[in-house]
Length: 165
Image 1 (cartoon, rainbow, N blue to C red):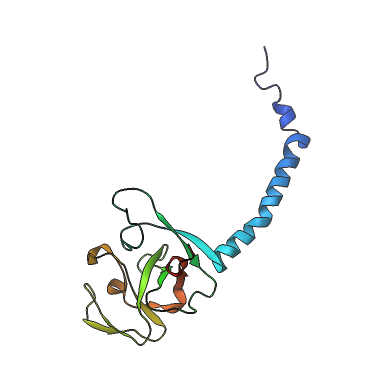
Image 2 (cartoon, one colour):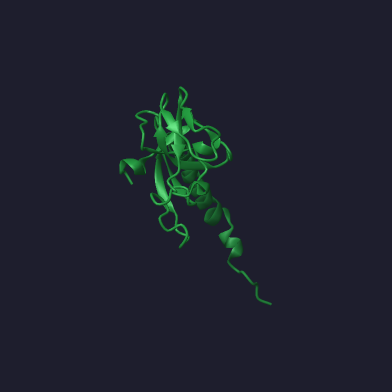
C-alpha cells in the first residue's frame, strides 16, 4: 500500500521546515513593535463607516458597501486644533470605537446647540471642543449635541481635512 504523503517526513525535518519557519518568524517579530508604535504615536489608517459625516465622508453610504479611509495624525494631535478641522476620538458612548466629527467650536466659544442637547446655548469649557457630524438630519449623527463637549487630549486630527490624503 503506498504512503499518502511520502515527502511529508522530509518536509517536516529540521532542515526543511523548522529553520525557514524560525527565520521568517524572527524577521516578522522585529517589525511588530514598530507597527504598534507607528499606529499609536505617528499615524493610523481608519475606515469610516456610517452616515454621520455624509456628505463629506462616505458619500455613497446608502448605495454601496465602500468605506472612506482617512489618515489620522497621532503625533501631537491637539496642536494647531482649529474650527472646521475633522478629528477622530474615542466615543464617549462606546469607548471601544473611534469616531470622526468636525470641530465646530473651541474652548471659550459659545455654541447654538441642536436637539437632543438640553440647552439652547452652551459655552465650551476650558480644555474641550464642540464637535458635530455633517449629516443634515440630526438623528443620523451622535455628536456633542448628544454627549456634550469633548476633552481635547482625546482628539486626533484627521489629515483628510488638511488635504494630505
